[in-house]
Image (tube, rainbow, N blue to C red; front, side):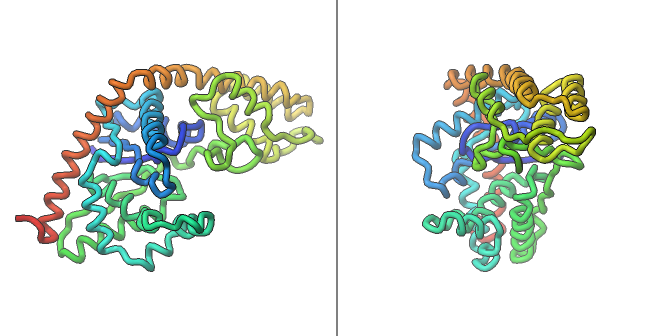
Amino acid sequence: MEKVISGIRPTGNLHLGNYFGAVKSFVKMQDEYDCMFFIADWHSLTTHPTPEDIRRSVRTILSEYLACGIDPEKAPIYVQSDVKPVLELYLYLNMNAYLGELERVTSFKEKARTQPDNVNAGLLTYPTLMAADVLAHKADKVPVGKDQEQNMEMMRLFARRFNRIYKVEYFKEPESFHFNQKAVKVPGLNGSGKMGKSEGNAIYLCDDEATIKKKVMRAVTDAGPTMLNQEKPEVIQNLFSLMELVSTPDTYAYFDDQYNNMSIRYGDLKKQLAADINAFCAPIRERIQAYQKDEDYLNRVAKMGAERATAGAEKTLQEVRQIIGFGK
């Protein structure tokens, strides 16, 4: 069975874009692959979070993964910082990663541009830590979006370079894994682009009913269609795209007809969409709250995941040390 590994930075709550873009597929994949999911708290240090923020965010993501249906018995969930062998592999990979190639990484250049007062070494070597996270477990596939594809290329480069320098065929080159032929793009509520934390246009799985309604009712719209069966502009198509994900086909068809015959009332569409999003999120929200209250269970899940992940990573590191020349 192929091994799949994926991580998420603990920077806040999961939103509908996370769920439909990745987590829903993770739940399905755990029955088809040897999956491991981790919470990348080391990566979050590039933004200098407080200790309280790190601990709270880790518990939040862990609770939300469980609430969405990831079974820790099938797919271990672990906290990145609990698996110490990854740091040693990070060191070895950094010794063979070069400044020029790291500086050319698009995500690093973008971060350096947008946060010039915090261009730290962790940002520069993000690709090597990401590579260590994956190569330590000899994963076959890594679920990624397009924004991570360059980091995946770097990961494969580091694997090839290690093999070439030490004249071995040790590390495999992990493949980028895309869930579908066409990735699910969940639009935001601000009229353009996809849903995301930084864009401020997200509906979170833990949002209560009043918050969901308030966000949806504020969604951007236009003055309405001016011709029969006209193409929907992006601001309107975004609402219909959300409805396609959370509403019944009959509901979608009703409002689509209303738009096409120019009788649509956006207020009615938004009220229905808010109700349908809440109906979708409510059971997940209840499970999130239940898990967050059960600190002992969260600790057991994290410990179990760390033990399984550490065992595999330590075996890899023992072999890597021998290859490099540090083994006895």
